[in-house]
Image (cartoon, rainbow, N blue to C red; front, side, top):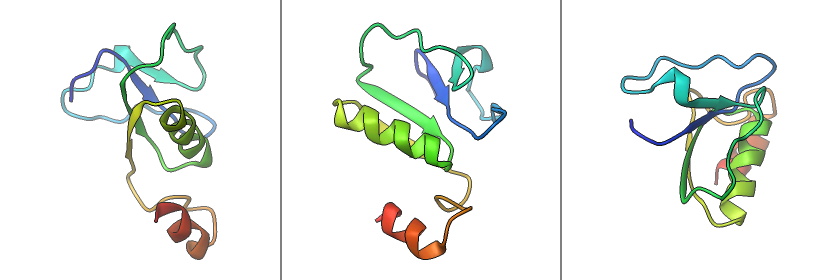
Length: 88
C-alpha cells in the first residue's frame, strides 16, 4: 500500500492499523489538522464509523477517487437495515 499521505478516520481515539506497506508516519487522523492545500486525486480511508463515511462522501463529491477500507460491516453501531442501505 503506497501513497503520498494516508488518512485514518476512526472514532474517539484513532488507532493506526498495522497494514503491510503502510507508513504510520504518513497517516492523517481526525485529531490532526489536514495539511492538504489541494484536493488529492485519490484517497484511501480506513474505518466504518460515520465520520469516516462523511469524510469519504465529502471528498468524493469534491472529485477525489475514494477507497473506503473497513474491517467489518459499515456503521456497526446502527441498525443493520440502515447500514445495508448506506452500503448499497
